[in-house]
Image (cartoon, rainbow, N blue to C red; front, side, top):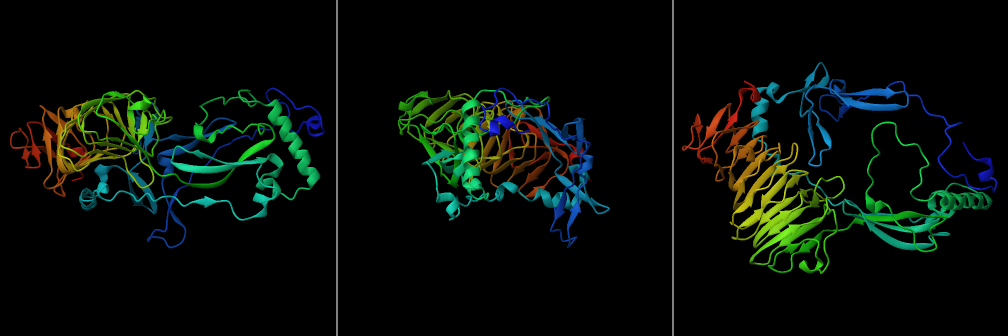
Length: 477
């Protein structure tokens, strides 16, 4: 509802919006329909999915439409920062023309055997560098054009946005609206009043009656240049991938991440980290690098894509989240024969590769968390896990040795060991896992271990005295 005095050269209204006269849409219900398109089983349209069995709309009040999880093949977990999360069904079966969720135990034996021989870590999804976007060559962008800029902001996903400040009435969308000069002048005057009267920090809309508002990437909040605080708006003119940022530890001396002098660039990495950050601890020698920087928003830890080691380094301090960015899954690389110790908590935002060219021991004594995410070991090194780990995705050992100091150090998901690789179960007792693949062969339910263990099935892919157990409930007979 417009304020007539405001739009007729009167003063700008102040304070919260008056709900009197406002109209709120009444929600009576909703629907949710998903389908599988381009299926060879149906040439036209899509084949429906039985969404109603695990995700349904609901209306907690007359003004709110939401969705709630069901119980059919849905599991619940939480991120490292305590944020709850739901894991959607992984397997579906075509039942009467509808794709219906089923458990892994209900997979037909021939399908389960084929899936066991497919290692997704061998062929990670190709995450290409996104295309560059540039504003079209149209007069609305240049006539009358921007009043200030260009400026740049790097977003948390690594994209760099170039933007300019336009007078509100001169921005391209308004220039394309077909308004007269007089109408644009009136619109500009109203924008000036709004910017003058409605300052940052005020409350103008009532807060939500339930739930919480979504987070916004802080890089999207930009400050106007001097003289453009009122009546001007930022307009993006291009967007492109900004490339990787490499942070190199300067000397083989102990120190904190927040101290600029510890880095070759003479500047400390940004607080919170970024998915496009790579850290190199390559000076030879023995030293400790302490992460004293804060967690990135939404990550539950300091966000990095790569940790690369070539010295006798101890990495300690605040939690670190290993996350992906364009073209690169997260990695921890051992590139020397020197021993590395990691006792800063690690959170797996996606499945992480433990790689590199060096053979030195890497001892990860901290907790590794990450619901439904896993580890892929592919290096000649020995990777020793000794924490009470809670990651639940697959553990894939393609090369080298994975050593587990306690049963809980090994993830509870699928375990796959390639020929030539070894898993050292250096504990007493057993670890229950969801499935086991040895040398590309899916194994039936049972207790597995080395010849030095009490396992029913003893195999050279294992060493140590501990065992792993694949329960019969996990395997379709």
